Length: 234
Image 1: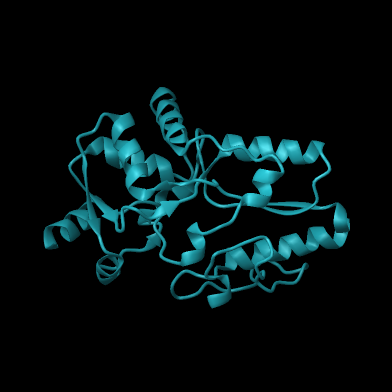
Image 2: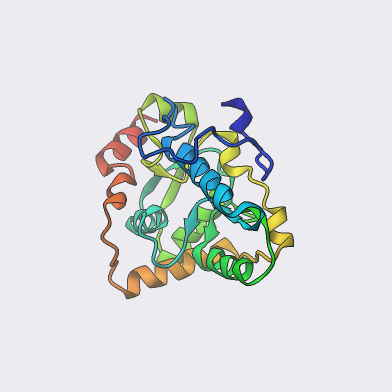
């Protein structure tokens, strides 16, 4: 695991997966890393490389957020912020995260398809935002009086809180939020401020009646009762 722990560049080693692997290949570690999904993404890249050789372009986005998000990470945080009150938040507040706006990923993909790019590009926000800043934006755009309560990772683990799903965007592996995107920036990636992504997602969410019905949404967000129990125990 250590060689994937970060920081990560395009030259970091990939998980080993053959190009012809099926959906059963790989495994997910007890702590959530590596993942079967990650193995199969690496195998997919190998399949494309075998078919197209040096002509292939690989975009490796991190977490994608923005209007239309069906996974439910940012929508969950927005709904939680709107509800207000004491909010369970993963310490440290200064931890920087690198989600990228779906519109910026799409623009970069079109740019690469129309150009002469080759090889792999990490597509993550080059500046990022602190988790504290991210939650502050969620509270601001929803007009909420919510108050984050920052809880240390070991305390969350003791209470059986699942990284990445029960507390969306929280994961302690160093490489998750230490992804170097300088190569993509040099090739034309332009990322809007994450605050704009939060605002635009809330406007979409409120305007369109919270429209995305997708099974992955059920995977994200801690139950209200569990959150209350943890906060009461602090």
